[in-house]
Image 1: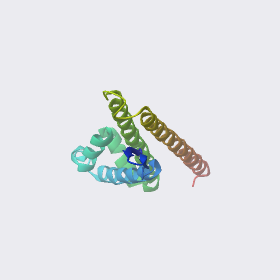
Image 2 (image 1 turned 30 degrees about the vertical axis):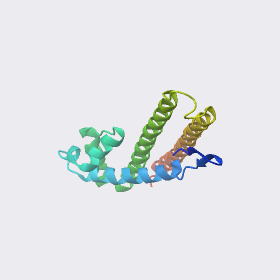
Image 3 (image 1 turned 45 degrees about the vertical axis):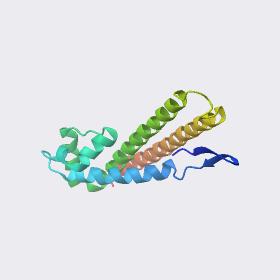
Image 4 (image 1 turned 90 degrees about the horizontal axis):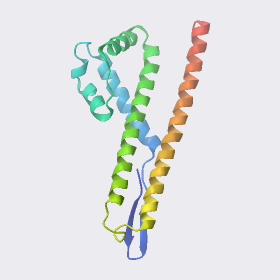
Length: 168
């Protein structure tokens, strides 16, 4: 998620990052869609024992109470179209939470590493600044992604409100 900087004989060498947050977000959201499907299709008394539920808790501390599980399970049976929209929103929100955790860990790791170096000979001030800029741009990319998702959710909410008003 951040570029790699190294010194070669010919000078500073940069290996650009090869993935975007949008691509990662899409993959993680699909993971959560799968996990929510498995968890919600499980019986009320057993959903916390599923591998998917344990994975949700381990990856991003996502917890469903028994009442929430019961409600979502019932909604999935009675109104599958409504549930699918809610599932997509839950998966997207869960993915964003996990991405926030990943970025925070990257920031802590990079800044701790830079702060703990004994002298500036190992990592120059210039390279340290490049890492700082890379982390700031990653944070800005997350902010932009959050904004786009917020607008998509508002759009869906407007459509849902219109459907309810017309009775469709």
